[in-house]
Length: 123
Image (cartoon, rainbow, N blue to C red):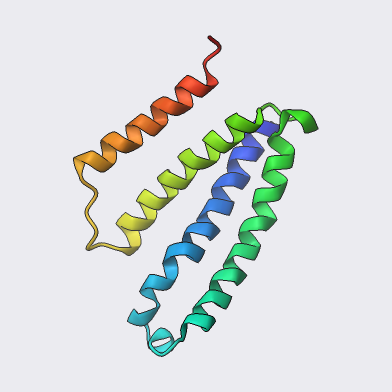
C-alpha cells in the first residue's frame, strides 16, 4: 500500500512540477498572461512548485526503505524520472498540440522504462 501511495503522490507532484516548468510557455495565449513579466511568471511557477512539494516530500518519506517504505533511494529516483517523462509526454500532447513526438522520443522513453526494469531487477 505504501508503494502505491508513493507512486500516486509522485504522479500528482509531477503534474504540478510539469505545469510549473512548462505551463508558463502557454500564458501568452491568454489575455491575462500576455503582459506578464518574467518575475510574475517565476512567482506563479514557484506557487505551483509549492504544491509539488506538498506531494513530493511525503511520497519520498512513504516510499523510502529507511522510513519503512518499499523502495531504495535509487528506486525512488528512477520511479520519479519515469513518471516525469510520462507526465511530460501527456502534457506535450494535450497542451502543446503543435509539438510532435517522434519515433526517437518513443525509443528514448522505452530505454528509460528499460532502465526502470534494470534498476528493480534483482541480479
